[in-house]
Each structure stands twice: as structure tokens, then as C-alpha cells.
Image (cartoon, rainbow, N blue to C red; front, top):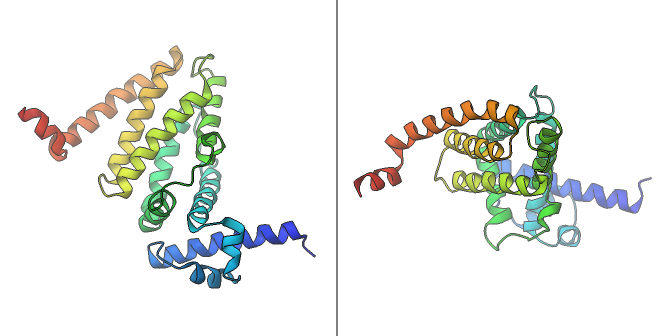
Length: 228
């Protein structure tokens, strides 16, 4: 017989899973809370009692997706420096598998109504990048005096900006991946030891060339700047 807390946790999981199924089916998050309750097999009051709002449910969907993402990333073979770039590439692969679903989650969690502001340092996405920074520092790729929180915050914010640009149709996934790789390489290089720097410099040059080549034919901002 499950305890009260176990039953409560199970209902929360059922609601999050139901929200994910509805978004995969619909391609958006326009379902009602009643439809969500029906899909989860709970009363209409339960999602409100357990989460408070639909936006909070979308944030829980994001957190669930983050846990699954970390599981997949853990299966990849990459050292403590390369893992930053593998993490970005894996994320773009997942977005490509179900773009409408991921866009729907992002719009619901961060769009209409504003973000449900939780403490940044409790955010699973921030803590994920902080752990990677700590591992890279301990492996000797980053200087020992690098503050993991400060660097992790910069990395996560830059990634999030590019994700939103993709979600709003401003860039494609290939450009998202290149932009974040380039930004990450620059940020990490600024905190790198000599061994880390030797690894990052060639990557920075290659990514810069790739982005410059892309923008020379596709970015209207470059055309405007060249004509001034």
C-alpha cells in the first residue's frame, strides 16, 4: 500500500506524462487543464492542487526531459572538456526528433504569462552545467580559481538565448549548434588552463570560419553592416 506521499508523487508523475503525451499528439500546448486531468486519470482539481498552474506543469515537463537527457548524455564517450560540446549536439538532436513538442514546452514554460521565477541556483539546467564546469576544472582543463557558478550561469544563459531564437524560428538547428559551440568555446577558453587552451583554440577558429561563411550568404545583418 503506497504512502500518502508516494501516491502524491505518482499523481504528479502521471500528470507530467499526460502533458507530454498531449503535446506530442497535438504539436502544441493548447490543451485545457480539464483535458489534462482526464488524460492523467485525476480530478480537475488535482493538477492545480499539485502544481498550482499550467506553467508550473510545463516546468516540470522540462525537468523530466532534463533527467532523460542527462541519462542519454551519460552514455556518450567524451572527456571533461569535449562533453560540453557533446551536450549541445545531443540537445539539438533531441530537438530535431520532436521540434514541435520542444517548442510547445518552451513557449508554455517561458512564454505567455512570463516565467515562473524560481531561484536560478536551484534550476536543474544551471546545476547540470555547474557540474560539468567542476569536472573540467578538476580534470585540469580550467583554472583552479574559476568559479563554477559564474561560468555555469554564463553558459546556460547563452544556450538558452539561442534555444529561444530557434523556438521563434529565427535560426535553424544547425546554426543553433554552431553558435552555441562557438560561444561555449570562447567562454571556456577564457577560463582555460594551457592544456585546455590548446584544445579550444583550433575549435574556435574553425567555428568562427563556419559561422562567417554561413552569415555571408544568409544573415541580413551582415549585408546591412557591409553596406554602411
